[in-house]
Amino acid sequence: MTITFYTTLGCHLCELAEAEMGRVYSSLPAINKVDIAHDETLVAAYGERIPVLKRNDSKNELAWPFSAEDILDWLAHT
Figure 1 (spheres, rainbow, N blue to C red):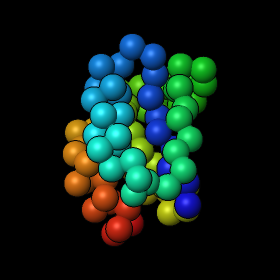
Figure 2: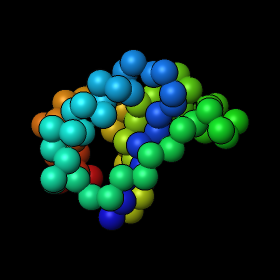
Figure 3: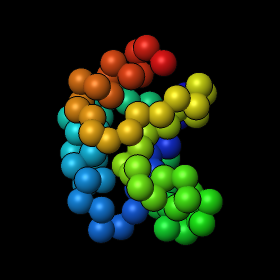
């Protein structure tokens, strides 16, 4: 399983999300960090919602706000 982290440069909330992910880094699968600014389709889909984590296996998403505990729960139950 991999997780896609939708983000963009200069996003304060994205920085907070990364800090939460860092708290549980050893429990996370591989993370593919995607800057939405480089793709108009992603901007349309996530521009108002970032930061967002998306499981590549189930396609389930976890949108901000989330805590480290929320991330672990999301991974275990989706």
